[in-house]
Length: 381
Ligand code: SF4
Ligand code: SF4
Image (tube, rainbow, N blue to C red; front, side, top):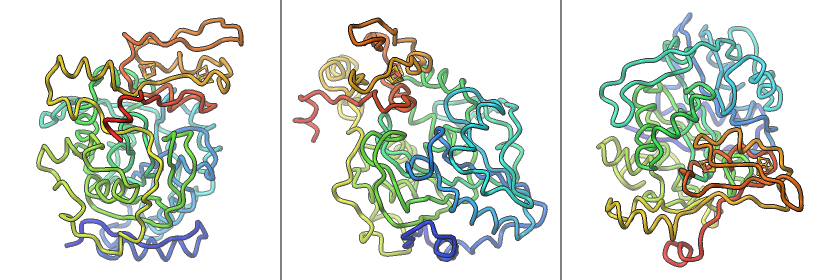
């Protein structure tokens, strides 16, 4: 039985994407499970008002091909996401427009226009026993996770599992960052989201990925592939491998493995496709292995190691325009805007900062960098 498939897709040309998607889905029986009248929610990655060429969001060509195929089978499709910021029609309108989402609307296919929320109990969750979801996800008969594998300042890698953080409504995400402030707790919460939603299918737009200062302000990096799977975590094992990110550097993979959900190497999953041919050995990473994963869980060592070695957000004074967006979004209220010689600048209270990297993710100018101390670079290349 195939765990993950990976196929070549060298561009966003409609015919090429259609052929690649059919091939990627073939090991899983295509879309034969889709029945007329079925309500399907497609969870895209629409992290911000960024053009498709920025490679931060799921490309509209992939979403359109998928949605057209679902619509042809008579499904009622809703495509959505809730990035950081407000979960309102007005806020999402700007994101839909910038990310090219209107191109995918059609018969039986609409962009999410329901901004209700609903809390559900999840007693089997390791971190999150109750979860407040965006309601359109809960209303669906099946969820398709259509993610964009990229680097990520906090979690090193964002793919199928991390994509589910966008099922938590807008500003509630800040509260979740604070509630699950430790990297292990945060990763476990993300794994809980994926386990609670249990996507019927996962698809990864890996034609263009993002390296460096991801998930919003890195550089596009060509990979030339689509991936498909029925298991979000197994697809992430392969995604991280393609981006040359070691398994142990990705907290969601580590926690999913500890919970017995996945093996711990790409060699232990069944892959359809010549995946080694897609690996990018010099893929620039946003962050390295989190401190908590190599301090042995000892709180004293962890505190010391964190002080000396942990990556931290650092404003780039030359690029910062003093807009204050980082201070607005910071869930720990650790950023104060101050008046310096060169204008308004963010000042970070290191004692309050929980290193969630929301400020880095949502800075519109890419001016909040992930700073790795020299000691960390030497010890943890
Ligand atoms: S969001 Fe970015 S540009 Fe705006 S104040 Fe913060 S660091 Fe500067
Ligand atoms: S300063 Fe940045 S990394 Fe620190 S808590 Fe605030 S948003 Fe998160």
